[in-house]
Amino acid sequence: MRFILPAVAAATALSVGVVPAAANSHHHKHQRHQARVRSHVSLHLSGHTIVSGNGIAVRGKAQPSGRHRVKVVFRGPETKVLTTTTRANGTFALRFSPEAIGNYAARAYGAHGAHTHAAASKARHLTSYREAGASYYGAGLYGNGVACGGTLEPDTPGVANKTLPCGTMVKLRYRGRSITVPVIDRGPYVAGREFDLTEATKDRLGFPGVDTLLANH
Image 1: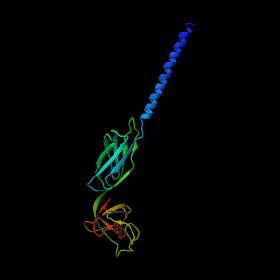
Image 2: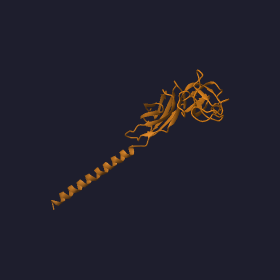
Image 3: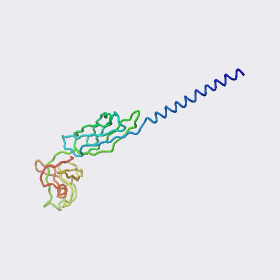
Image 4: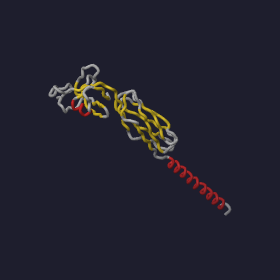
């Protein structure tokens, strides 16, 4: 009997030690699982139109608050990655100055960390323009063929350009109005002018006939 009791006591002690250890391990796993939270990143641009040589303010916020690594990626004619660390309240601010003309899409990404999952903001869009001299053509040429195929009519949208491939979609902006039209013809052949607008394009933009406008090519 004296040999049985110590064995029972040892087994009881072992079982008592095992249960808390297993419970403790489960508790730590649960804590680690609970510590990872879903993050969120917002992104805002101070404008969606920019003239070459200028820059825009880029702002956003990462949640939960605290100091996090954030990167903002601009994809377009060039790809540019800006990185920063958020303030204690989760906000961040940068400045972006595109080096190439064209259309960009921007997203902010919150870094994957020990306590947060990675997150991405909604895409924000930006067009970088350059100034270009332009005129318009049409009267007296209706019914004639154009260099890229087709016939010029009063309601034909498009522009003439000497070098851009036929069919290139060009976004033009003039005094707050914008339009995207294809290259349909060759010209103009007047010094200082890069685009000839069809009458339909001119009217949509409110373009006077000869002036400087903004173009994304």
